[in-house]
Amino acid sequence: MAHAEKDRLIESHEPRWSSVFIWLGFFLAFCLLQGVVVWSMIAGAWWLTILAVLSMAHLMHGHLLAFHEAAHGSLCPNHRLNDALGVFIGIPIWAPNGTKSYGPSLRPISRAGFGSWRRCRSCSWAWSIRRCYFFGP
Image (cartoon, rainbow, N blue to C red; front, side, top):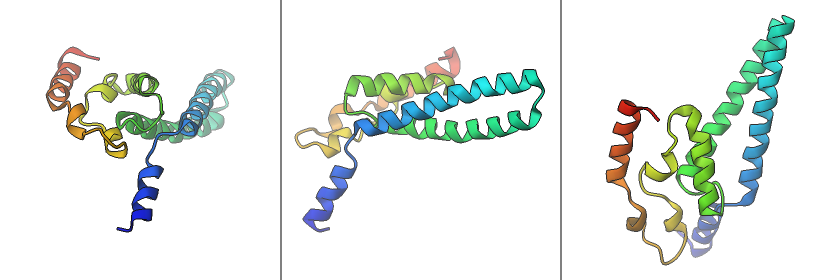
């Protein structure tokens, strides 16, 4: 692989603030659609309910992608905010500790001087799975 291609690949995986704002827009649209669903069910507009639920399903897929990015440490440049957003996104899918416990982060790979061994949490990952399934979130 050429050096320029490798640099471009590494740079494209760096976390950016734009991804946080995109997710925030999806979250606000999701909250708005929840209000539309409640209103349309009260008003009896079943066709609007169906359209809103299908749109919410599409936005929930975006939330799942954002959770995945937060778990890898690439949703937000601020690491604490990245973990907080990951926990916030993970609560409805019963994975509130997802950014802390599910395997090694890819963030150290893109930054020189940090080894991926430093953030490997395979033991806490196994405990987190047991705790979630047996004791709840």
